[in-house]
Structures are given as C-alpha cells and as structure tokens.
Length: 198
Image 1: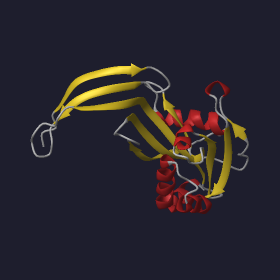
Image 2: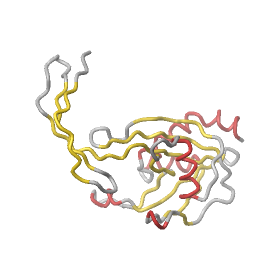
Image 3: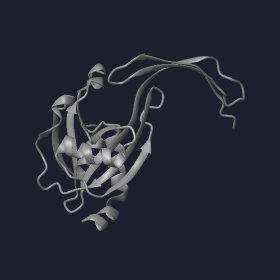
C-alpha cells in the first residue's frame, strides 16, 4: 500500500500546557486516490508513562483519585480513579518516568516493572505515545494524600484488591482508559506475576 502523506502546512497556534498545532495535509486513500485537503487540530503532549502499582503478596493494586477538568465538560464527575501517570521528559526512559511519578503521586517505590502496552490514546487529535506498565511494590503502608504543589496536584491514594478494581471497571466506577488497559492486562497475567513477585 502506498502510504503517501503530503503535509501542506504545520502551524503552532497555541503554546501552553498542551501546545496546539494546526496540521493541513492530504494522504493516499485506500482506493489509490489522494484525499482532499484535511485540517486537523493536534494537541502536542509527547510521551507519557503509566504504572499500575501491584502488590502480588496481598493481590492488591493502588489507584489514585484526582480532579480532571475534561469530564466536567461532559457533565460527568470530574474526580476520576486512575493509575499513576505522567509526562515523559525528552530523552527520559518511560520506566524512569513511571518510577518518578509513583513517588510524586503516591509516595511509593516501584521496583520491578513489566510493560503491559504501548500505544496512542487518542491519535485523531493527541500527539502522545503512552507506555503502560504494571509495577511491583509493597502496598502495606500506602495511602494518604499526595501530589506536587507546583503542579497543582491534589491526589488521594486508594488501595484495593484486584477483584475490587475489576468490579470497579465492570460497573463504570473506573473510567480512565490507561487504568483499564493496565488492569485488564494484569487480570490476564495475574497468576504469572503472583508466582514471580509474591
């Protein structure tokens, strides 16, 4: 298949928390013709790392709860249960990002990690490649409030059993997509991780 793409223009129209680029392009269609000109707004995030902390000995996971403005615009509850996550700095290994964010957002040291997935969360409008991990940790003393003041973070830690987290996913209480991917990966690989990490 011919994957020709003609970029007609690329203009940064906003520099902020998420820089915004307007991209004008044409691309080869599946029928072999070129598309009409397409204009798309792209939010430039870059890289992200996500980690679901897992204590194999107690078969529990750590979820965080924090305010997110986008669900508010959907008339939904803006306090979401999520996994630990953060932006990957240029040149930073996503595993190091995940470890750093676990300390910042949950006061937690993550030791071993396995990559559960890597992918684009919303490739139609967001320039972000997310790496999702499940991380080995001891959750026996986890809890409380965390987050960096200079990033306006206000984070509450929740420690629940894997079965409780899966029930939250099934009934809609857990609606953060990276958290769902990590949790479902854990469900598929739980027995193996318990053998290796417990």
